[in-house]
Each structure stands twice: as structure tokens, then as C-alpha cells.
Length: 288
Image (cartoon, rainbow, N blue to C red; front, side, top):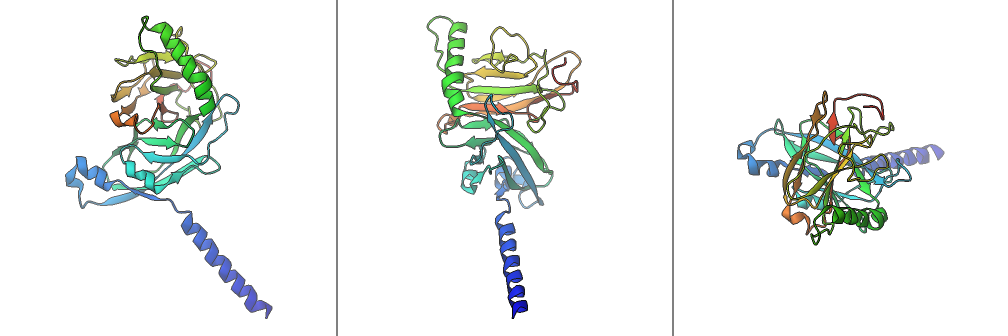
């Protein structure tokens, strides 16, 4: 009698494992219709399935390895992607499969949203026919933002602007100008490339370079070893941002600050390494 029971239990276990595997499969985001809007000739062409995945870091000063679970990840170009309910797990990681037309690149801007936190939009990620599994976002701790960052930046820009000018904090673009190896997934710190210059954005305050204490410092005129750069109160528009430093080539990033972003609660626009402004300088941490 024991043998049939054992076989039955093994069979049940196999079914449960198969179910768990199926349930663990990524949601599928079909962007083919989105691609057809700008390129109708793609309709009916061959499609491919690629994977996007990344980690949501809990950006605060205490623990570099902290993560934020339960964050809803959707894509600004496809607002209905919220319905897929893509969320970061207990390790901070999320993933989604993307169905797209083969050979046709697409730009997607991940948006990170969690109740009580600061809704954050990434730079535009160029989606090709290969997996991208190293996305990352430095998701700002909400208390850190409300108690220190927002009031501190408002005080800073109040001193920088003419008397009576509007100094209320509405939004900010924040990027990292990094070394060639810079990545949230790499423990080497600091990962910034010091001595680089970034352009101004018309109508915004900045660039504001972060100092070695990871704080925007209006006295700084170039990047520090932290590599952080911010522009505050950026008007709606599309912005391609890069950096300049003798002997170094940088890969620029592109942001879309859309008029509808404010209604969606988007306050921060962040490009985190390895998808920030990456340079080809491979020197050691803290070195020029």
C-alpha cells in the first residue's frame, strides 16, 4: 500500500511544482501596437520576446544594499501596463517579458510607484532584440525626501534665484556620471567620474553637482567622486543629457518630462548606473 501512496504523492508534488513554475512566469508586455503607431509598416512582421528586469534600491544613507519590495513598475509610454501589476519582490527585483517587432528598437521609460513613496520615472531605455537584465533605480526613501531633500533643495535654490522668484520644488532630474564599470549591482564605491561638466537645461535650476557627502552643492562646478548631478524644476520637454571631460567619452541619457507626468504624481526623474551617463573611464573608485 505504501508504494501507490508514494507514487501518488510524487505525482501531486510534480503538479504543484509545475503550477508554481507557471505562476512564476513573467507577465508579457506587448508593445507591437505601440511600435505600429510610429511605424505602420511593421504591422504583420516577425516578433520576438525579450526580457527586462531590474532592481529597486532603497536609496538612503544607511545601507547601500537595501532594497524596496512591493514597488509597482509600469512604463510611461504605455500607461495600461499598470494593469500587468509588475512589482519588485522581497529581493527588490522585478521582471517582465516584452513582445516587440524584430529589428525595430523602442524606447521605454520605467515608472516606479508605491503608496507613500515618491513616484519616479526613469530615463528612456533603448529596447532592442536582446534581454536587458541589469536595470536599476535608486528609489528615494520618502522620509529622507520630505524631511531633508525637498526642504534643503528649496532653501538652496531660494538663495540662488533672484529675490521673490518661485523656489517651490516641483520636480528634478537626477543622473549619475559614472565610470565604465559603474553599476548599482557593483559594490565598488564611489562609482562617479570626477571632473566632468554637464549642460544646463533652459528654464531649470542646475546643473547642481553632488559633493562627496552625496548632497547637491551649489559651490561645486563639476562632478565629484559621487558623480551625482541634478536639475530642479525642469519644464516639460525631451532632454538628451551628457557630460564632457577631456579624454573621456560618455553615453548620454534621454528623459521625457511629459505634461501629464504631474497628474500621474511623478516628481523625480532618475538615471541610475549602469544606465546613467556612462563614460569609458575605467579608473579605480575615487580616482580621476
